[in-house]
Image (cartoon, rainbow, N blue to C red; front, side, top):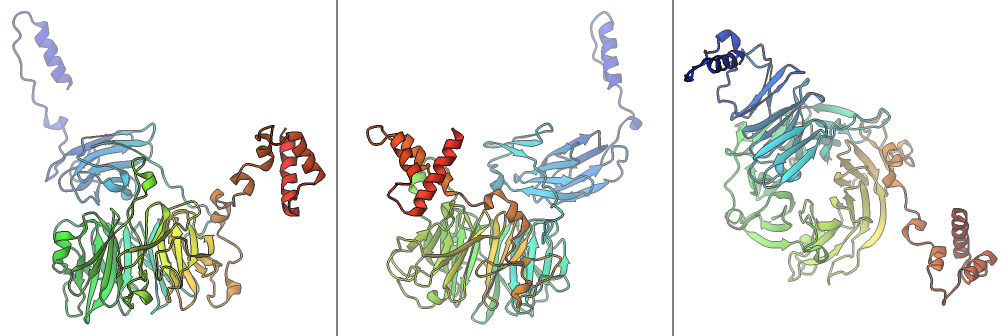
Length: 593
C-alpha cells in the first residue's frame, strides 16, 4: 500500500500532464492467500487474538492464523445456511456469526464450541438480512432486517458450589421409563443422561447426540428398550440408551427444520414414530425390525395435511388410542386427526383475549396438549376430553364431539404466568399445571367439564414452587404416586403428589423412593428458598391500609381524630382479629409519622 501511495505522489510532483501509472504488482512474499473452495462471503480479523475467521456458502466457519495460510486452525460447523456475517469480540474471546436464515450463533474461540443459538422467531428478526454491527462497549449485536433487533450478550454465570444441578446446560425434555425404572433427561448441550429413579443416582450419559444441536423432545418405543430423540438439527435418532449406540437416523431428504415434539404410536399392528416441527408437516416414520437401513425417510404426507393442515410451525403432538391424534401450532390452532384415514376430524381455534385486542401482541401459541383418555374413549358429546394451554396463562378444556368445543377455561397461575407444562393422573382426576415461574398448581377435575360449559375454575387442591425458571415438563408416575419435573434451570426433580420435596437428580445423598424419611422434605431446594419471588405477599401490601383509608375519607363522613380514638380504645365493632390487625397498622403508621 505504501508503494501505491508513493507512486501517486511521484506523478503529482512532475510538471506537465499527469499520465496514470499502473502501480507495481504486489510481490508474492508481501501477500497471504487463504484458499476456500466455495468462496468467502464474509470475514473478520482480530489483532488481539491473532485470528481471522471466514464464512461462506459451505456453511463452515474457518479460523485462520494470519501467518499460516495452508490450512485453518479450526472449523466451526453448525449453521444450516450460508454464513453472511462474522464478528469477533476480543474482550470476551467470542465469535458472532449470522447465516442467511437469520440464525445467530455465539462461539467460544478457545474451546471452538457453539455456546448459544438464537433462531429468527425467538429473537424477533424477520425479513431479509441487510446489515449487522457488533458494539463491544455495550456487548450487543444490532441486526437490521424488516425491523431493527438489538441483542445483548449476557453470559450465564457458573452455578454456585452449593447449588445442585442435574445438567450443565438447560434441560429441555425428560421422561420416566417404567420398564427399567429409569429417568432420561436431555439438555440444550445435546447431552443425554440416565438416572436411577429409586435413588436419584447418575447411571450413564453420552454427549453430542445431535452434534452440537439441542435435543428438544424424546419418547420411548412400546418395549421401552429404545430411546427416540428429536433435535434442532431436524433429525430423529433411535438409541440403545444403555450404551449410547445410535441405531437409526430419521430425516427428510430436503432441508431439515427443527423438530419440536415426537411420539410413538401403534395403528393396526403397525408401529410409527411421528414428529412435528417447523416444517409444518406431520412426518411419520415406519418402525420395522426388518428395515436394516441406518437412514430412513418419512412416509408420504397425508393429503389433508398438505391441502388444509397447519399454516404455522407445529409445536406439540398428543395421541389417544386407538386412532386419535392432536397437533397444535404457533397461531393457536389445534387439529384433531384420524390416524387410520389421515383425514382431519376437527379443527379447534383458541379464543383471542378481547381486552388486549389492538393494544398489545398476545402469544396465542399452544405448546401443550393432553388427552383425558378415560373420557375420549366414551365418545360422549358433552364431555371435555382434550386439555391445552392458552394465552395469558389459561388452561382450556375442549369437547371433541359437541357443537360448542370450548367447554371450560381458567387461569391456574396466581400471577397469570404462562402455563408451560401439563400432566394428569391416570384416572383423569387431577391436573398438574406448571408455569414459567416454576410453580406447580394442582386442581381436581374428576367432575369438571362433564356437561354444560363451566364458568368457574375446578376445585383448587395445592400449589408449590418446584423450580426458579420455566418448567419444561411434568410427568405423573402413578405407580409410585410421585411427580417428575424438569426445568431450564438445569435441574430434574422428584416430588410427591402432595408437593413434598424428594430430591434433585445428581445430589450427593441418594434417596430411597419407598422411605419418606430419606426424602429432603420438609426442606426445599436452596435456590427456591432464597429467590425473592418465593416470598409470600403480605396482605398489607395487597391493599390500602385501613388507617390510610380513614385519612382519605371525606371529613363529613368521619374524622381522623374520632377514628384514631376508637382504635386506641379498642371500641371498633369488629371481631378480635380485625381489631388487633387495625391496631398494629395504626402503630406502624404512627411510627412512620
